[in-house]
Image (cartoon, rainbow, N blue to C red; front, side):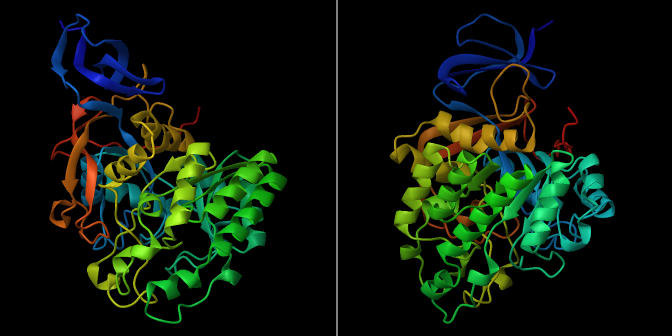
Length: 437
């Protein structure tokens, strides 16, 4: 009888302690040992990946799957296929833009029923904090959601209303009672305006840096006062990242994420009418993007996730005022971030920390996002020096609308394993619940 089900050898096994030449040993879907690359051991499958890097499966904690209710925008089958193709093995689904939104137990059950049997990677769920659900969040927490999302400005869909700042404080106090997590789309509504023209510059001016900075400063103050855990979603303004660092230094339990589009795209390059670039908060200038990289390196921003927010192509038509605000990048996040990271002197260990380990820690999945004994054998064979040009026809999410068409990227996902099994056309993903430990 073999010692292991699977043994993967590589000259570049990416661990929290750096890259090493090693052999990752898998039994029963878990990593049970890390051995030297040339170690003698028996396994049902023993494969040497050569110089392909072996990364932990990425954890994307910010994905809008949209099913049920808006499955024509995206669904669990297509989203999780795209995730696996991009090296993402765990997805945490946002409580909107599905119908109903995940703001009560019946909606959560509808989500789980829709996802069951369709997922190619593991999937968990966020709950929603809207005015009508305040005071009732504990039930969703006990049912296993990973935390609660709220908006401080209009969400873009009528069924998911924003919270006032008094309601944000109430939500923080409520989740503090069971040490839950509030994740916040933080833009100050009084600083937002309707775009005055069809150009990108007008749209950018309608959602200024100050809208994020003011909202994050206020959130940090409330987190400090209440003692609750708060997380800032999709930071686009470097000034907002500085507010996160300031609040944390003052004792607030606050963290933040950014997204590949804020790190790799620049307002100066967005043509008028190119609404595939529209997202909220918006893509800002090139100097701001460099400052976000610095904030990531310094730890003010802890993770990079997709904010995968697709829609039907018709909703991306029109001008920047009327088009849907969302970028679909679930499949491209790893090469996008790696292309930018390596040019700035970062290594694969940094990328794995930002895109796997940190998001897993945020949502409380310690057995995800790391190559270490006891962790799920969610693994990615990655060719870090190979290049490709983004062809929308190769993207596996439902509608291949992308601002990255024609962009040359470095780093190719060659294979993905979920709990030690290659991801294929048979859905094998599990539905996850927040750990009660």
